[in-house]
Figure 1 (cartoon, rainbow, N blue to C red):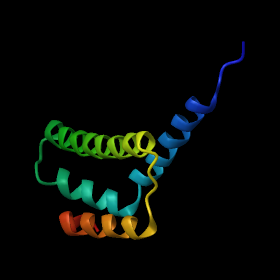
Figure 2 (cartoon, rainbow, N blue to C red; figure 1 turned 120 degrees about the horizontal axis):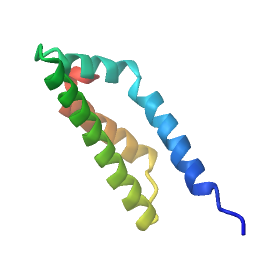
Figure 3 (cartoon, helix red, strand yellow; figure 1 turned 180 degrees about the vertical axis):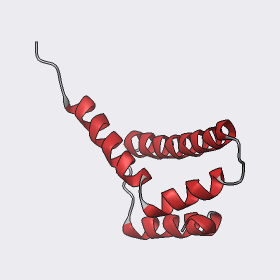
Length: 93
């Protein structure tokens, strides 16, 4: 019996792409701003972890919904969502 490697491969590629995305300049600037609000290392780490967990939850929800409902994201919707993010988080873009 052979194991299907497509799921672990997809998760691995998704993880690597997430790391790449998370190290983009806008994300580094946003996290740097958030963690500079407090001088406590522990609180700064908690803020960073919370920010990352929020990103993960949002992406996971959108990904699962798109798979379950067999949705695709059109370029127009993608642009609209990017504008909404820019409006919600102006200091990070």
